[in-house]
Image 1: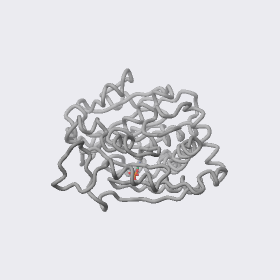
Image 2: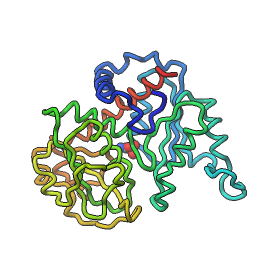
Image 3: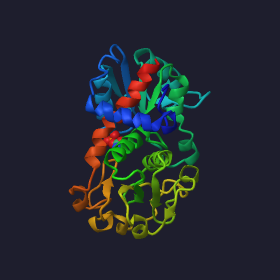
Image 4: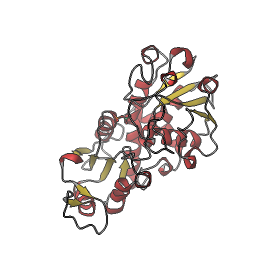
Length: 311
Ligand code: CP
């Protein structure tokens, strides 16, 4: 693997999931692979899981890790040809090349602004690093995708599924703030790649990018969609059509124990209790959110391993 910015960078998904599960059983098997190699992690936005699990994954492979909260560094310019006489102090052209002097792999977290749809869709931060860095780039959640989370979720479903093609429902949830579509996008793409029996349910107006959902069934009736589900992945996202808007704060879309039925409850975390999901679900045996969080390490580790092997 030469980079991991989208789930399509994985050439053999089922093999990669199997290998990640093997790594989980023996996390230090490749502890010398990353010796004298450095991962630099760049955070334009907050993180708990991605930051710690990716660092742990890199250290399991023997790598050195450096993290930079980019907002504490120089304000970066991304436009070409700008006269930089305002707020930006350093162009990404220099910054990405400089960081490449210290890194063997660069990982980037950069959320969307959720104001300018085209600008967010251009993935200008992630793509600038891909363009100007001279080392491989890993996406730790960008404007439109969270492929490390999706891989962890795929590993989780593979481990816990009791049938070859479980019914998986992606269910929108209320949230007081406008959130990106990135997690939902990558989860949908991952379930499509794995040919799962996927249904998406959300209120009208919350349709995801049709280039991502393709022919995945969408049901505006949550109760109907959840019927006989094996896994329910709950996530809020803001409107894609009315870009970045919060259209509906209907608490009825919150996941409850009653709605969940016998399904396993999934969420990428962080999650707002009793807004997105009620306590009774999160605190129950049906919740697999800690399983997912644990698998973040092995998703990152298999990706870093495959990139290190390609250097
Ligand atoms: N799920 C996830 O990406 O968590 P963090 O935002 O804490 O990294």
